[in-house]
Image (cartoon, rainbow, N blue to C red):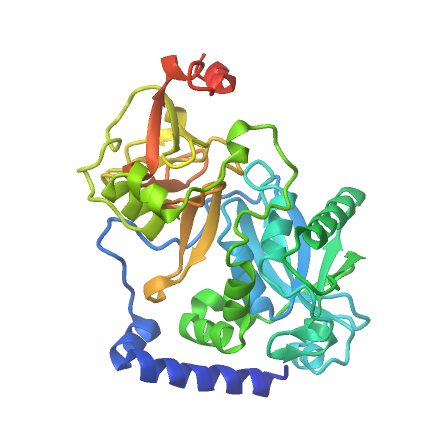
Length: 384
């Protein structure tokens, strides 16, 4: 899409949103800030050091959207919009968007492998694009908006190919997967105004991503497929969990537990079961029993909710971009039961600088002396 076409689309969509939501909301988007009355704050970074970070490169159409998809993932140091795969050195946005350079709009992702794996980045990538479109992505047409994974070494190539096969076998898509897997080439950083577009121009970004059709397509495609995983299987009993029906959940959960885990509710601060619990043990999903957090990583945040510096394992929880109320936050959900747990912020203590702000109603606490009896014996050595 040309610069003029993209601006035209975003301008049209912003006007539509203004009409729908009112001038008061526009005033907030343009210059104000807002936070819910839950004690949680907007997340503006990851608290992850550049030292030891690894890199990955993905092309998924408009780089504004792909940058946003990756940058809010815990463990991602930064996502940089740019151009790669073409023949022109130091291309400009006008050159690339006109389709004259052979470049893709792409994103260079720097990540901490101790907190997020390359496989998890691959899964996020597949869930952020239409991998069956050979002519671009959504509103953006042309080869510069095609999808590709650019591998930096043989390991990344093998993992990318394995994830593509897993996606093909998942049955999520009826049409062939056409996303290319290519060796990495020179990556050219895009102009400054393209970086962090989803934060700097939140209203425009939200309008564009909605009007382009990307959000509606992804919601429609992955509805009912949240349990599809492209990650290597692990030998854990809770991975066989099958989510009960709504009626069964209402019978087994308290009204508050159901509200929090199934309806994205929030319990009262300082009036919940575990905010001041100091006993050693594990916090597991109240719905599935999957282990989520350890008391070893729990700290007193002063917010009145259980707070942790990290999940018990990097892939124990799932994070999703949350733009409700025109805020940009990171929602935390359990992997196998898909329970809403809380939100993630970057105002925590060392060593991660992160704060997983979790509802007690989404958790069940298993004391250290009950771990073996309840099937969590593998975690006992962590407390010794």
